[in-house]
Image (cartoon, rainbow, N blue to C red; front, side, top):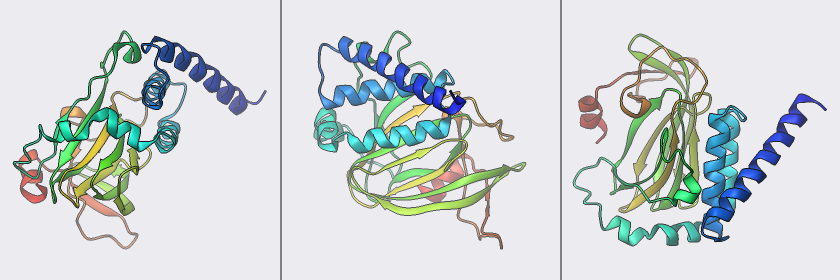
Length: 249
């Protein structure tokens, strides 16, 4: 058997086995949301164990969210109740962590990853940033966003070299993912009041060793709005939180 066939067969077997156990443990429920949560956590475990790559994870998490009915996810989140806890006092994103059943998340709990809803008013957003050794997925569950992403090509002393990838409007059901290898820089701006994403983030993913050190949540804030070079790349300087908030929030 070719190595690729073996890996795919192993992945399918491991995913089925772990998913079956978790689904059975989740209070006997077999609804779409339970299956979605179980597979989401299983993909996280397979990534952390090195059985799939970061880009494989991106592809599979995108497929998972595409085939799971958004209406079921929205009902489970109870968006009206969640939004009532957001004050939208600034253009910075506010967040809330939906509780996950212990039968699904396993004995390790939430160590090394997060599952979080972000809420923004019109013109609020997630400031442009990059991550070190991390993957994330952003599922739009309410409102709409302008999403701008870049591939991270090179780290300089106090800046990064970026290549534009995406400048698009995301609406409910659309998903944006990132890793060290693909669309590492991401920037979301809300186009409507009560725009919300449901995010999954996983830390300490094996991959590219980056020159620039990250701060809280493996994050580095940057300014990707500079003039493009002749080859289309952009040199984006690193910002402090105060600088980023002043310019973007």
